[in-house]
Image (cartoon, rainbow, N blue to C red; front, side):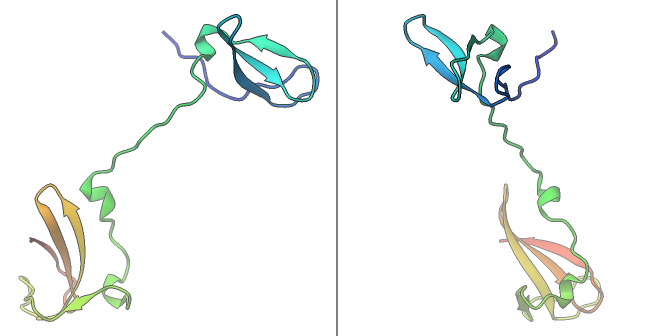
Length: 119
């Protein structure tokens, strides 16, 4: 079954946009032109006049790597953690809510090693 493409409809007389409305007397959906008297009945496939699609992102999509994140002065820094790779005590971090609760993503300012900690 192929779906008909949704899109805008235009008046064949004036080339203006056709707007959907309900014909309460005939109990049907129709399209009308605001600038002339043109009216056309909507086909059954046209009954859907609006679609709202929601896109979900995975945690990996939300945490894209930013070039030179350690040089960004707007990100918070901490000296209360130790890098598991080089044992340096300064890191840039961001927080995010995940399925495990709040997660802190760290970037070492010395060796650029990345790790996370679940709070």
